[in-house]
Length: 378
Image (tube, rainbow, N blue to C red; front, side, top):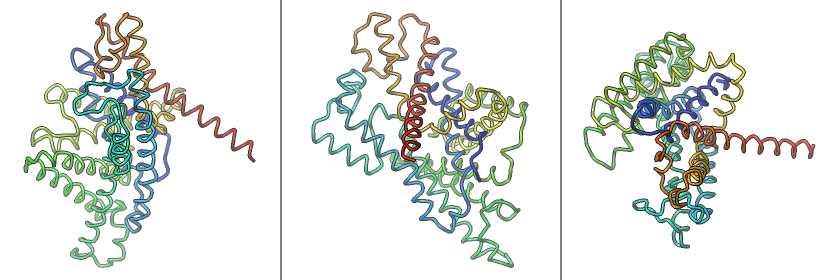
């Protein structure tokens, strides 16, 4: 399926919500907002990745893996190496917390080598790239979803009662009752595996359980795309979802990592509903003049993901000067939530504007310069 403007707008909304979630307080009115957006904001990206999944990759799995390496692994390595190499520069600018538990504030040669190796192995613990846990998670969820669909198709072709097994080549395309059943089976399998891993109560398997849940969200995006269900819904549906998620956030806040057993399937439900809500809202934003901007934000969400925490430090510096505080306060990653005036909401607006606007502005300038160079060469 070709990428459309509505989907890009939905991703743009989700990216703005991610930035809001990273700069709001966990108490008071901001706490309600933060808890609400954190219920589903990251899940939207897993859902949208599944939304654009192409069935052809079922029969060309290596092509899909190469695509994910290009789209996820390569950018991850580039951005992480950039932050690793400039780590000591950021440290000297008071951008990195020197007291963070288990973290080396100032790198020596050995530290650089360790972090380069970790980066190549698809790992990162750079504080300014804290949100980058999402990229390896999406990579794994995509691969797991691909092979789950493939295994289900093979199982049906091997044991199912189907007259023409050649038709099963499109079994996961989800365009008839058999294929919808196959997609549903794949989702159920992933959720059951996540449940089993949770019941085993092994700390090391916590992230593995989350990976299977995000894979289920990925496949829900694919399922709803192929059935056309994601295009349904109106403003009433969107309002209902907002109210429902808000009530759940008040009763028992959840994230992508379940804390109790009942949250395991509920995490998938909330994230799918939140993603659907973003798609509904996007259709209304699409008719506004601001739709192009939000769409551009969605298309460049990776840049924002990489730079928004660093951009927060600019606002931190303004706060240090405005309140006449010690420059060392900038190092603390909770500093942006500590406002001597108690009027943090004003700063939240500035954090969001800088955290989203500056990375997007830099990307736009880069695109324009690149375009001029290409035109000049031609």
